[in-house]
View 1: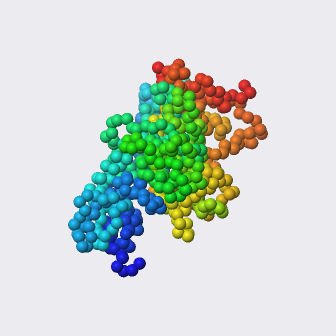
View 2: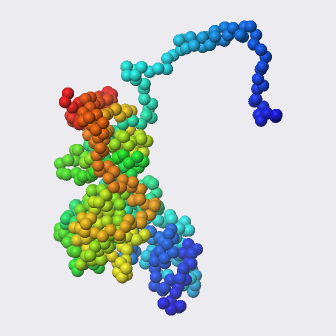
View 3: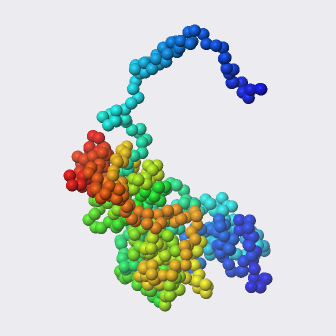
Length: 363
Length: 176
């Protein structure tokens, strides 16, 4: 890159030189940390994504060196390219903080907030966004939209009520597969992700829509309700896959593989493989290779200490094995004659129909 | 030597008088205190005939709550388990089938729910963490047991009676 093509841009008082044509969001991500605006619909690995969710709005307080007027409105940083001498305010701007809180409120209007049920909880971008930027209450007093259930085949589960219409999965299907079978049907409040009519998604790379989905609208059916992500231990692993790079993250509990996903970077996007291509993984790796023997484990995946995923302490066999009984060993094989039954003791918990294991044996 | 504080008392080294050497007055004084306790309220609680009342904030054995229609509230979200500092809670989730809507409140429910009372420290963080009002600490303690297995309480041990199917047991548990 020659000298002339480098633009000097200042984001939150931090100056960085970026090549011409870079978006503000990309420049901010180069600085990293809090300066990078959150993004729900923009995905750097997908052509044409971005500009829909408005979460990445920033204030441009100086347009460029030649035209120093500020931009009149907040701009979507994922779609606005930098100019030389541009000054951008992200977290230093009151307007941006306020606008982002409103955007979160808009996104949550139709979101069911069923995080206790949702498999995405713990790695959900909307959860993180509303935690960081949202307000605690809601002003929405009406019925949330509901949809007729669509079946997307045996690997992918669609929860249309959770969808924020970011179009990431549509771009994924367009760019990774030969023929896209799902898309947005209807418009306005009725717009929904669906197939026409009732087809199943069965392309070899279609499983990546699960990874790109920022919310829990598209989840892994083979992992559905199996475990919470924070009880699993993410491990980097690879295998020799003929169709994809085979570089994945295994989500283990003990030696059991519960889920296979692609590796994600700090922005929640798919990590590049060493040869510089996005590390999309195929359906065989994701859904069908859940045996620990199939994988070469590289080591534990680094997870941010702030993430709930690093809060799970239940690793290995905690809660998976029954305790050893020592009573028989120290009493020459005799079993206890009298055991208390909780239902005789508890005032609150009288339970008629249940025969406790702990009742008197051989009475 | 200078005293460090002004609270120091100098020792009285005068020889005791005749009455003091008899100790009679001091013995009477002591006995007065001793027999005086006969007329005071007894602090002893004669367990198990008598039981001391629990404090209203007592944190005892867990119960799993049901809603007004008797459906289980727990959705196996795992927040109690991740909040638990003692790693006492484990669970397995399952998906609600059609026709089970009267049993479980949400799409997902806890198929297995175990609390290891040997690990539990009764801190009540599970109660705080629960987003569904499903787990509460009751005013009952965990009774003694001879086996370790007996301290692993399963979902059936923890659930409160169903208000629709076990109305009598529910009323009894509520103390009505």
